[in-house]
Every structure is written in structure tokens, then in C-alpha cells.
Image (cartoon, rainbow, N blue to C red):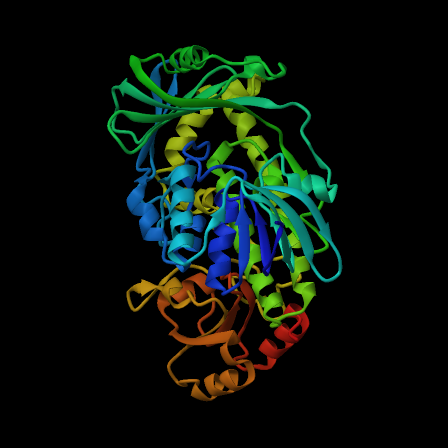
Length: 520
């Protein structure tokens, strides 16, 4: 007998993006149904690196330390040309004072999925595994899907649906959205192996060749390595199987150092097109992660970007579902994340060409300029402060968003739409004050006022919608924001700045909520 389930949000796909969205919806007290055609969380992992911004997101739901303890912090790296170390890279404390997680973390996709899935289970939620979507319809009032499960058909009715179902997304096909981009796929491989390799005080190795590369990451467990690279000789071939010994030969050809692969746990090849949907939303349905955009694995951006998609969308869905904001708030998801995806596709394509392009000038750059440049970048503070925000994704901003009010920010180094900068308050991270699933009003004080009147006025007008903190004007705050007199900052629930102003009152807050958020 067909059953009918009613919920707030349907999540299609239980990879890192879908599971992250589910975790965030738990944080906001929103009901959901999540399903996936797989049998369980993946045991195989194309994605390896977790960046600082993802750890900051995890930290808001108390998962960051579990990730760090279960992963491997990248400390040192080495670039290789023709079997010789051409550059030594120092990534220890790479992010300096820019994030509470100033490093790159090897914490592969399977571990991310397990971490998020266990959080769901601990909060009384479950994924419907071995379940596929047979049909999807929507109207002005909601979304209706028919699922094929191991026990028959099931109908689920919801207010909204989010397709987190990968590059071949059934959701995207149901919505009739094109997925345009690069027409020349590139073939990549990923392998988990047990390998004898003489390490040279490096956490990872990157071997660069004529038109290909191989990356080698040590994983948890004795002699356990992850190999990632490309096979340009297969770029123009369709559906041809690649044997593992071809991958092994390619790695040995590039590394040119003694290595002995004693066991292959698993390997996979995959072609990556750089593509994105023209829009990430149609009516009450949204796309996130690989369902919305795919690109080369350069910089380890893919999984992290999907998690940020979910983070951006979750609070907006929650505020609309709870009638804190009008439906127009949801338009900002497509606005902010589509723009980010376009930038990301362009950037990762450029990174890939630098790593593996066969043009003479790129080969010259890799062989003669890149090693020295990479060594400099990882040694000098100014270079690190430039590179880390870009790679770690803490530098992503929404300054052009309709949710960013710029009226009062012209005298500040930090602008509306920026991620809230990291600094310490009484020896602890400022982010420790920003875990609650709500907006945050921060007043930076010179100590002459306690702002209790403002706090009472805020509670009366906005109740539990906004919390309130008074923070001293520490020298570090003055340095970051570029101003030494009292000011206020309104943070969105995802800790991006809504507005910043030296006028400390509720006037601008009222304007923001009524005009920008669309308060009901």
C-alpha cells in the first residue's frame, strides 16, 4: 500500500551536500525527509581535503573537532620534477590569524559522510537508503514526489525540495534545466593504495610532468596513501576502461623515485566537465553541490563548495518556513551561489591548466618559475594572507548580494557581504558567540556604554530572532575593521555581514529587516 509522508523539506541525495543540509536543518528545527539510491554512506572518496571555511561551518554544530581529530593536518609538501624535489612547501599555520582552523585537513569524503550521518542519527533522523525518485511535481503550494523504495512506492509532500543528487542529478532532469559548460572532458583517477615510499619530511607530494600530474597524500593507517592525477591520453576517448597498472605506471613515470604499491584497496577513473546549471532554483525546488555545478578537482574545492551551498540555503529555508521572512529571501540563494559557482569554475580551470596544460609557456612556468614561487608563498606572511583566503574559501564574499546593505560601510576595511573576520575575545574565538541559529547583532564598544537599553529594545522588537553581544574595541578589532570608534555589525545566521555602521541603534536594523530580509 502506498504511503504518504508530509514534511517541510525533501532532500534528494545523501552525499556530503545532502547530509550537510540535513544537519543544518536539524540546527534550525526544520523537519525533512532525506533519501538516496545508495545502500549507505560511501566507502570510496574522490574528495580528500576539507578547508577552513567548512570546518568553521562544522564548528557551528560542534562537529569541527571530531573532523580534525579524525583527519590529518597538512604540514609540509613537496613539488617534484623528474624525480627531484623542486620546491618544499611549509603549510604549518598557513592561515595564521585568519581562521580558528588555519590549515588544510586531509579528511576524505567517506569520513565526512560518516561524521554527518552519525550526527543525523544522534538527533533521531535517518536516511532512506535504496530509494529513488520516480516523479516530481510542484505547484504554488508545495512539492510532491513519488519514491521507489525496497517496500514499494511512497509519496512525500513538502513545502520545498533540494536536489543534492550529484552530477547526473535526476532532480535537474525533472526540472528540465540544461547543464552547459566544457565540451572536452578530462580523465582523472583516484586510488587508495598501500605503498612503500620513502617520505622526505613532507605530508604530501605533487609530481608535475609534461601535461599531467600526480598527487600523493598519506592517509590514516600504516603505508596508506591516496593517489590523484590525470590521464591526458584518454581525454578524447569515450567509455574506454582503464586498467590499474596504467595508473601505476603513470605515477611511477612522474615520480621517478622508488615506490612499491603492495595493495590496491580501490581505484576509480572519472571524467570531469566544467558545467553549471543556468539557475539553481525553479519554483520550490533547488539544486546544490554537484547537481548544480561540476569542475576540475583543482584546489579541492568541490565537496567544500557543496557544503557551503547547503549552509547558504538552510537558514533561508528555515526563516521562510518559520515565517520570519518572506519568500523573496530564497531568491538570494541562486543569486549568491550561482555567482560563486561561475567564479569557481573559471578559477579551477585556470589552476588545472597551470598544473597540466601542455603549452610551452605553461611548461616553462611549471619547470622554472612555479617551484620558487611556491616556496616563497608558503614562507612569507603577506603571501600566505593573500593565498589562504582564496584556497580555504574564507575569502568568498557576497558584497554584490541583495542581502548586503552598504550604506554605512564606506569607512571600514570590512564590507557588508564579507564573512565575519576571525579574532579572539577574552582568549576565545569570536565564533564561539555565534553558534545560535539566528541573526547576531554585535556592538563594538569603547567601554563608555553598556548598551543595556539597546539590548532590551532589541529583545522587545525581535524576540529570539536576533541575539546581542557587546565586544570591546580590542587593538586587533581596530586593525581588522580599520576604525577606532564604536560601531555595530549585523551578522546573518551564516556569519556573513548584513550591514556594518558607526550608528549604534536599531534604526538601520529595522531598515535591513524590513527591506532586505523581507520580515513578515
